[in-house]
Image (cartoon, rainbow, N blue to C red; front, top):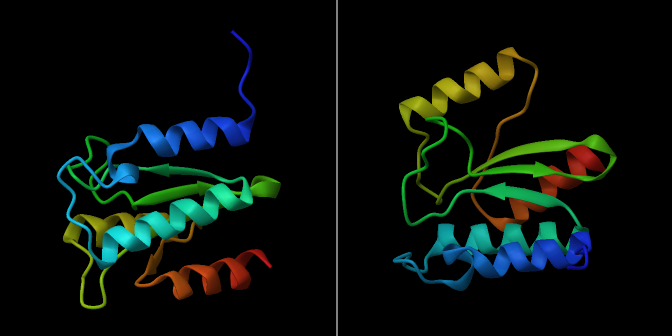
Length: 124
């Protein structure tokens, strides 16, 4: 079996996730659309987006952000998506505080424009 290129792997990953196909019980909405836009932008840039499905609770760490993005040059972004009025849960607030204590950024974005601005500000 031949090896996949990184781009082929990312395309495969985006197809196999239920949330990327719009199925799996996820109702389309502002936050879902934001997730899809971020995933598409990461694929376009050749970045790896570690992302949990929106249709079920994560079984990883409570308060973990929606995205951990591995960008070029060894850069890493931690991004939590919220609707215009959405608030961080207590566990997300605690995780964000711990991230910051360790010197990491925990970005909260409410629309795709905020995500792009964060990239420009932090990563040129």
